[in-house]
Figure (spheres, rainbow, N blue to C red):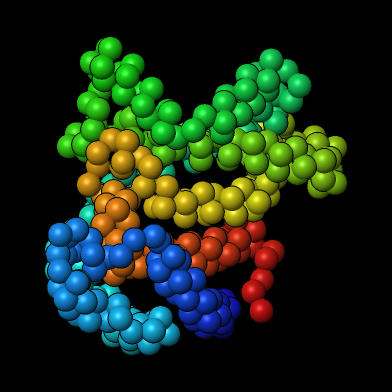
Length: 306
């Protein structure tokens, strides 16, 4: 296990380097001149050029990348072009809000999605199965921004039950967490059903039934646990998408988190902040995939790591 963990950590180093190149190149493909944005439309060309020199924007992209990575290896993500605040400090001030929102989505969506999928598989072909899959397909098909806007219109504007923005209370977290978690719930419901049905056709499940074990034990002791391996993979990817998916939710509900910071930074062409956020999203994806791999051995003790 330890050797496997160390090997996976080492494998992420070239992966993160490749990601950093793509992130850096993507940032510079965004239309617009950040120096002109900072200086203003009426600024003299000399002022704009001075800003370019200050942030090394007048250098070739290769030199800019090497300097950026040199700072990054020392834990320095640079300073925001807009406010002059260190990027690390700027992200940390927004991270708490985003993590609170992500936690609210994780709190209910995975459990409900897996539960719906398992129940749907057990009741395959019956009315409950069709109802569960209709719910899953609806949650998967509905765009997140539409769900958020409809939630605000119905529960905030018309009924007045929930606030339309902010995370100051548990009521304020209901609509944003629903918007973020609905698609996760729907995806996990479908994958849980598919994985559970596949597991129920295995020989060891039929053997357990032939031995006279109770159906509840067969379902949850044998079938459910083994079907979780595929579901955990999808769950890891979905949780990884929550942080990056917070962009939409935080914009709709005016939540000052990392997603909203990314949108504002793109609008201002704030290269250091955009790069820092995208690199952070990439790191959390890689980390979650590593955690998922390690969880396989917990779910199924027969899995061994070389």
